[in-house]
Picture 1 (spheres, rainbow, N blue to C red):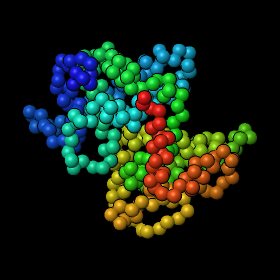
Picture 2 (cartoon, one colour):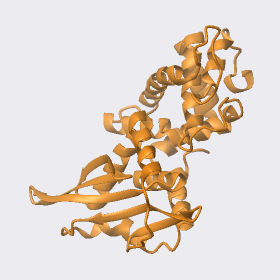
Picture 3 (cartoon, rainbow, N blue to C red):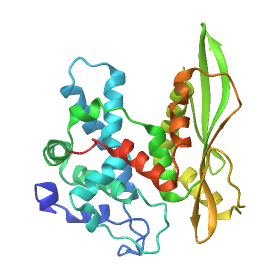
Picture 4 (spheres, one colour):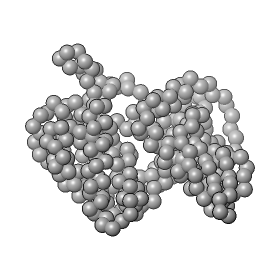
Length: 300
């Protein structure tokens, strides 16, 4: 643990709990099931505060929107997963081999729980030392992250591909505001509305919808469970239409990406994502393109 933290813990019990995934079978002396979800809740809040503190001091004079976006890029779950693996935290997590397939954020959750453990054990200053000296200075280039354009739609497509989940972007409305077209899109995950977004192009509205959906998948465990419950129950028929990618698993076809709209008049700038995906010949190419866009440059 010293190799990861850079200091010796005082109360090792906090750190042991931080490494217990909810699928583990470890119980307390009183028979209660132990896991890291409470520490994850605490660590999530502490980590937001720590990164906000660092970003505020690092980018003097920058506006609130820029600071918020930069913090979000640093604490996004994909980045935390990569950090957890980089420092070796993934090798210490205790979990059941029978845990469900949508625990792809297990390492990132454990990292947040670790921050919560440090806070309870040694306080805010120790947390700040850990984040600044062991994480930011070694693994993340703050300036590079801050000015990197995040493609939330690609990230969501990548997540759906990895989890074999049906995904659909739908343009639901187009209107005029002060002479400019405004688009409203929503994203459906297993036919459940995951998020909606507004923008001055279809692309921009889809990005906003995808960002909201990713936030729900990270924060709303009930929504995440509902998505996989619907996935488990649905009966899929063999059908391939334009704009639909199909992946075969155990000989059962699963529609994993679809895009449609209500055939509204759009500006030219909104067609970029659709054209790119239509030219993609296989699911493997979609995944590769999404991974390259989603993770390029987050870590040194």
